[in-house]
Image (tube, rainbow, N blue to C red):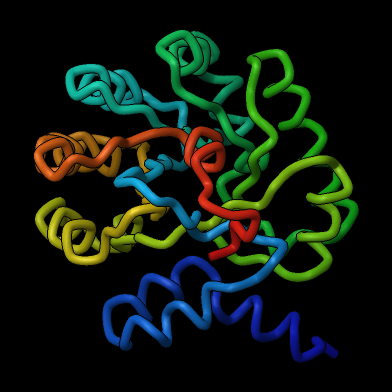
Amino acid sequence: MMNVRTGVTALFGTAAIGLFGLVAPRWVTRSVAHDPGVLFSVPVKEPIVALTIDDGPSGETDAILEVLAEHEARATFFLIGEHLEQHPSVGRRVIEQGHEAGHHMMKDEPSIRLSPEAFADQFERTHQLLEELGGSRLFRPGSGWYNERMTQEVERRGYRMVLGWVYPFDALIASSTFSTWFIRSNLRPGAIIILHEGGARGLRTADVLRAILPDLREQGYRVVTVSELLRHSADTNTGD
């Protein structure tokens, strides 16, 4: 039987955080997004946010990289192992252009459904690919759902689990207009933004970035990787 903590943790994964951000008061969102083993946002004293992009590398990664370069923004790309095997040169460009590569498991599937053995196998295979690439020790579970066992395993392997504060449901809602509005409405200093690539989603992400990055610059925000955001933490409690 699933224990209470594990059940609550799985219930309030990344998608649930985004839904609460849409329909619930901010204090409810803040109380949900608090797990010492998972990073949702970072307390900072300056206007700085982290941008994360899931599911690459893909045929659309270069379009996203072009927009980021134009606006001097940096991002953490949570890469899927199988996709990295298919597009190794694109993965290298992510690193060469000053961005960060994170661990997003070997396959595009909910990590929480994997047996402990399958999880360990996929984790290690993706870890080896990232080691060759020069990736970070940041991890995001497939589909954003996780439990206590996964958190402990990730920590044991020297990784930090990262979800986010601003998720515009772009993997479900095929609207760059909605994503742009949602990010503008929910952004705050220290937030971690979640977007996706792969096919039409990647092209929408490029469109969203073209819309929001000029706005953020005008507001004095810097858009950085998760690791850089952590370096600007205002205190030692980075789970928000």
